[in-house]
Image (cartoon, rainbow, N blue to C red):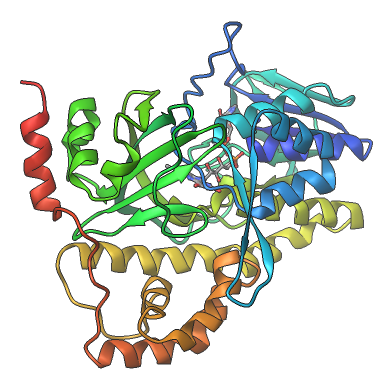
Length: 428
Ligand SMILES: Cc1cc2nc3c(=O)[nH]c(=O)nc-3n(C[C@H](O)[C@H](O)[C@H](O)COP(=O)(O)OP(=O)(O)OC[C@H]3O[C@@H](n4cnc5c(N)ncnc54)[C@H](O)[C@@H]3O)c2cc1C
């Protein structure tokens, strides 16, 4: 088949090379021309590119299965596999320590050499449809004739928005990111960790996470209600916040590490699920299908899970089954985020635990008070089972909250206190 892909991000690059290996003639069109001659890659249009990404095991597994050279190139670029021991003694993979940029550069460098796969620069304005069938993307005004069009244009892609049902659910979560990258001084050791993957604190009204990447690089992330703590976009205010939060002060101590980027403000975060458009020859994949707030680091995993399923169905000759698979396997993650994020925002206002079925975030938190809940959490946390895996634990969690127990906020200033601290640090 002649296959066109809108977008050469993780979904487009991975699918493009894997389909070319199956003998198809594949072109991925991206408005971004790739890394510049001097090596810089600003990646305008993918606002999260330099924000921290937790990279789950599904990503490495997909590369090893389909594009092992890309996996090797990623390791050669410094990516560090994470393994840890579960309470039952099993050694498991925790994914990869890597910046998103390091991952995508390695993937791109390998797949652009793939015979049968072309990555070209251009803007896809729309998809030409005739007789109910997609005929090809319209690239800078001209149709690129295709037997199959894959829309892998990400969370902000517009090229196929006019087709098919409107996204549902679709929502601004009212939550926003701000982050900054640091590097440990050689030979300084990393700071404290609260789990094998990250250091996390949940003071009153916001969240702080430290993600370790490759080669001593790490990101500090502050998650806040959109519209609050805006001053954090200033380097001096961010520094003041780092000094004020216990544990974070340890990670960012100038004797331990130094920033390697300015503060990176992020746009608002969305939970959105877009059903397949139901047009022959047009398939959505990656973030074009679903986006979830990134606090659980699920986007690259859902992207790779979709890509592998789409490949399997194309191999079988039944790509039309992809829509039902997405509805069954992807949409529940978005619904789960909608409920958890709404609850997080509510609790950040000082409200109490709501009545009714508890969202996953509160079920997980209750495991601290009732260890029986932990037995239900592993598959959910690893995404080896969907959110329904937590359903049996919900009544146990409800008992915990009915007993009056509440998760204690982490040490550190409240959001209002932090707002005052950072305001005094903002240059006049
Ligand atoms: C703040 C933030 C933090 C995140 N953190 C994590 C994390 O910790 N872990 C995790 O697994 N995931 C995380 N994610 C999600 C992850 O970044 C996405 O799942 C991933 O980028 C999806 O890849 P994609 O290829 O589908 O889309 P994208 O990476 O968005 O790529 C889409 C591509 O399409 C191109 N494009 C769009 N429209 C057009 C057009 N009309 N014409 C030509 N080209 C076009 C764009 O230029 C882009 O290159 C995060 C997301 C956000 C927003």
